Image (cartoon, rainbow, N blue to C red; front, top):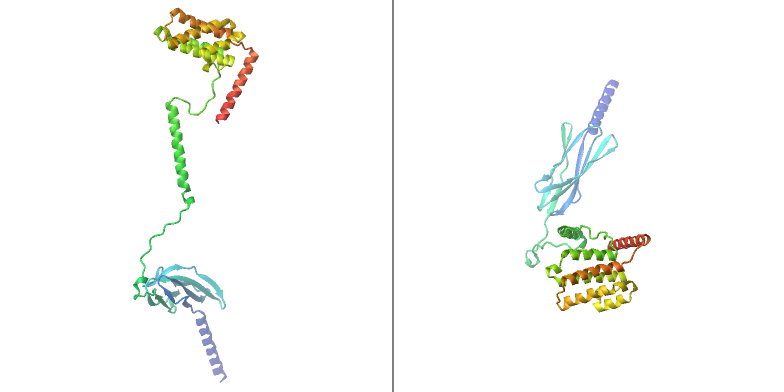
Length: 333
């Protein structure tokens, strides 16, 4: 009897041990939805829970885009694994689903491959409802609204405005450069002015040019005397400080009579101015000798009244002129 009793206990122990091992190796899968009733186009989460042995590889089969006809998978979340008691592994994963057809759906079970076995989940229902419409009140139906225009924001147009201004600026610069090149001028709007000659040197230079033109030999007596008197007026203005360009011939002679430095050549200047007035206003035709005499008296007047500059004075004058030139350039900048 004792032997039989021990055998029975051993068999019961083995059976319970085998049953426990089988149960421990079993894989479970469970499915639930956050909301079992949604409107068309709304979304809900389908929560998947898998429990398996820690060392057993499992593979969850999830449809990529469609659970069934009418129910779409929007997004598949990443699985989250957690170790639990009895050397078990808990895997959680969420699926975002939606539907655009109103109906009551019995969602198909999800599958888990456990070695050579396939484990199926429970099935859940999903009700998709459409928006309530009162067909007896057609005035409540509204047409599709027009597309709204966004509000005006000036900052959105800054790149366009800056681009237009830059294009205008570049066009102005290009037009300016082309105009300067066609005029055979420097591209820069300013340049360092050339140093001016002393008044008597400038006057002699101008008289030489008038003489080379041979105007009175061509019958252009008025032009000849106009150029001579203008040269002398500019010389008197720069040499004596009088506004000779705006003075009459008589006013110039009265002014020169008071200058002691010009006493010796007063008569020479008088001959030129009086004869020039007769030519310009009385249309007189002077003799060749009178034309030559006027030119000679002009040379004589300039040479006799020129201001002699010592080297030191000339150096100071040049420094002053350079300072004035630099100052004018700075003002232009």
